[in-house]
Length: 390
Image (tube, rainbow, N blue to C red; front, side):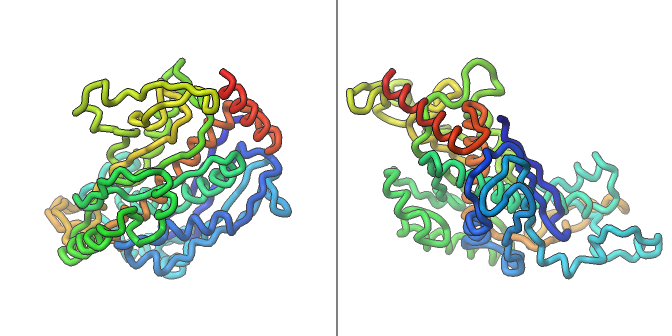
């Protein structure tokens, strides 16, 4: 069975809609399972005013009956509370030419770093709001909802995911934390950094950027614990698990880089310090003495924790806008400003965790028989037994 999803909806439209297809039947799921993850995305130091408006509580409207999936597509709705202020501007009903000419919040000044200008050219939109409404990071709320369902599925296999911030605006949490330390300290502060001693320095850096009307980016990390060995494949490019995860991470708004384990640091070290030695014991079976490669070899999981690092650029919507050119008059203007965050790195760490959860769940469902949850769990446990006996 193949897992897939579609999302629809605009940033200031009435709702975001998610359809997930390929989930096993009889998986226990409730809106609360999803809402707790949605709440995490809304938090984080540096977030803007929009998150004070939205509640991001989900409604499951198909594919679940009496708390269990049916095996049919699951539909989830996230209501945009802010739509109440945008009904005329974002309405579905046709409007007259006069109303179009007097339409408020028409955007003709593309913002540098956004999809505005290129999207307008591609789809021939003279009002660039038609582009930014869908290209907005608001869509990541829908992707977190998908990942939340996938996390419930993965938890039935004792596979858990953890996300954290490792850098904001050049301030780094460079300590080589153990997995246990990370698990115990994920939610201890509002910047989602493990070393609480540098959390205040990060907050001050975010405040400085906000005061200057600027924005800052950073690096986030997601760790997947207890993955079965051999998920993914070396036989063709589009079946490699690291390739799939990388594509999914860089598809998130503002993400410009992804790496695994030591990542780009591997370029600075000799192979003897990067390859993970293979060891064996009767109790553990085959295992690695280190995890420099981030739990992936040859496009497959190797049994070590999968470590995914994502680089987020500063959000391009600035309160001290950069120069742009009006698409109608061709005159130079300061780019228009929508509500924005000075730093969304803590929230982005939650988004990365959930897109990784989707890719992990998808790969597992392709690998094993999965019409219903008991069948799926049995197949995964049998694989783990075979791995241990190899």
